[in-house]
Length: 418
Image (tube, rainbow, N blue to C red; front, side, top):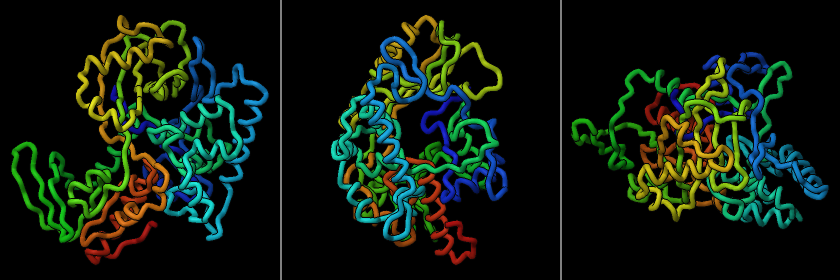
């Protein structure tokens, strides 16, 4: 079974996230009705999430077992606050939190949230529950690869208040599309629509005139392309290298360690694993059960395990060999599943040196981020980094935006989807 090395799900879109809805319709996953229905065969089914804490699994991503009345009261107050923010509209008439974020408000209150860390915001609002703090911290590490002490309050609240998926009572399943191979399903669909897709090339430099220097890896042949328009879809640290600092370089990214753990059979006394499995006392963000959506329950298990690391550990991640990284994965899973080594058939690891952009304080209004989204001669940059949030919705938005700008450069008439 192929397993995801990166993103493993796509949320049901908000009403304003029209580009994702169009793609889902193209894939046959959403109906053409004014109130779309989504193909429930591809939506996560129960059990969706579970937490491992002190020797036992609990449902959901908030640890209710052992929670005090004060803990639960703070959770309810936090959820009420997020519900209010989910519907909040700024003075500019835009939603406080929208997807893509380009559609969101730049109200002074939104910009204020960009100047606080999520940890500072929780203190400001009087939240002291350690359970709530862990819950919010997990969300930030899971989506952004960094803790609430690093992530901005704007980004942290975007996680909880930024999604208003279409509500269709007739559709069973959660609000997440997922496949055993993760979002590779989406990549394959998009790649199949490109008639002359060339892979195996490495860009060396990009100039504003449209000149691109690249090497064909198979033959080690260096070619200089003279392009009328260029879409440069790369992380901001790569863009900075390719453009000699003219664009990009405005944000830090989190390194990630990802593992594919294949077991001969499911661990004993674990008959009903959830799709998303999280360990409370862990530096990882847990693992997803890749076969969760399969029609037939397989005897064997395939897990995709994820751990975000601080940027200071990037060199360590690069230098560590497979044995050391595999041991780290198995050690993390041991409290919940014991020694998996006798049951292990294969364990692959993947190192993402710059896996996800970290939305630190000030990134929403960062001048370098805003400049990088502007045309640079014949070059148009497209990447999630330009939004400050590592989400599919942002990647798609900037890809369409850059493509439409490139078509305009070429004087090609096309329908605008933005």
